[in-house]
Image (tube, rainbow, N blue to C red; front, side):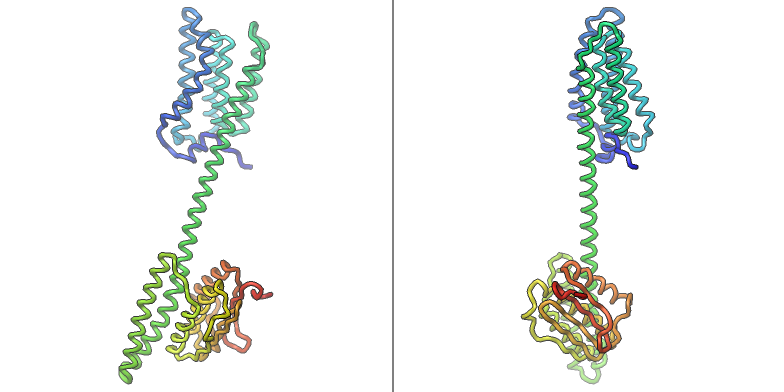
Length: 382
């Protein structure tokens, strides 16, 4: 079972060590106005009784403000401090209340309001409630037993009201602490999501671009002696692809990068031809709704990258409808958990989940490998 932290601990969590603020001290001092009643009684005394009463009242004020200073610092051992030192502190305040009785008379009961408030600040709520109940009982018993003391219920009401006010304050502060913690968690989650997005985009961008660049560079190396003009064209393509990849990385960093399905199909045809893989690709994407095109573009990019890099295929086919796309090859395809391809497919699944789509990865019906993504009513398995 968890316990409710004291207000001291809540403030420690909320602010950490800090200097008492001027307005905080003023807020504490305002409540000292209610000590005017015992003060008035004391100053009407004579001799040592008055002096002793004023000294005790001054010590009580210092004790109260000292505790408030402790919670304002909120770091001087507040977190993790055992309950008994707090109870000892309250016991000291209660003892000062008792010592004030000869000089202040019944008005000394006013000090119990401060003790109840401090108890509600310093202790676990269940212990604090028990302490407040004891204070209420002690005040009521004193008014009944001490001759000349009236029992009009005002002191008990003041003790209860003071404790209730501080209880409301501690609940508000605890809610504020929880809200701040939630905001911090959400901020950290947002940062992590952005890191994941960038890592996924970087893999998808560079994975495809570097694969095509590698294929074209190898082809240029083979052609440099036999066909220099063709080799030069391939090198020019490599330069163009490298510049495009750099632009894509910059766009990914900015977070504003979108893929064109038609553009990815053109790039896919170029990559497949460079790898000497026959490309059977659609020539139009008019039937694909705008909201599906970017996801399908990522499917084309990841699927063709894996075909070129891993499959050993001789033919690649892409089929597209309004709500479904398939990338098929006649090779072996990437094996499950097969390194970089596996990471790319994980990223593709994340994109599909965000779009409300499903992904199917596995062997094609006629052999080879198939990557399929369905959106809406044609989600896989429906």
